[in-house]
Length: 138
Image (tube, helix red, strand yellow):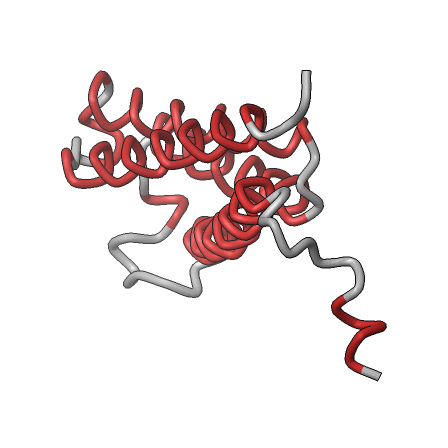
């Protein structure tokens, strides 16, 4: 009975980096869902006090929050399905957040920690994608 389940798994480790990449993409999808829902919670007022209400924020903050509320959830779907467009949307989201934190510090406060975390995730994706591409035959 068990042989039918494991018959599709290669003993030699073929596709190991591709499997790791898919697992990474799924973890990033869950993280993107959490981030997207957090931004929607800001828009709808589920998080923060009355002083931090969406309508009391500046227009750049409101625009960025809605942008990330939408793009994170779209990226999450694409990442979970491990589609190329999902990775592109996620990369756009990661780079956008880093640019906003570095170049437009008045919007979210310019947290260097967020930039570092986003950079590490980006480098992790690039390394896994490179290794997955290298294991495919030419």
